[in-house]
Image (cartoon, rainbow, N blue to C red):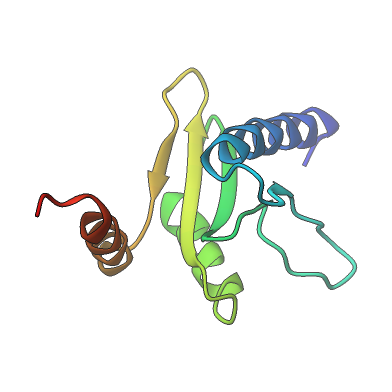
Length: 112
């Protein structure tokens, strides 16, 4: 991986972390520490395990699988946050996790 690719990836992680700080105000949302045997999400949040990828060619399934494997004992939903060059960012998660998130949200907002 070239230095420019690393900078691009770090910049993307910072952008995602900034957005997640708005989503989780008051929480310790930050870029995760990588290397030296540490396993942290690319962006650490209290609810989801975020694996961030940016570039011309993205391997969507591999990114989600990495998030799933790394998050096994975290209690957080694995989510891949992907941005193809010059495209709108997307998130990818497993259908059962998505259904669980929607059900939890619906319990909070549904009309009574």
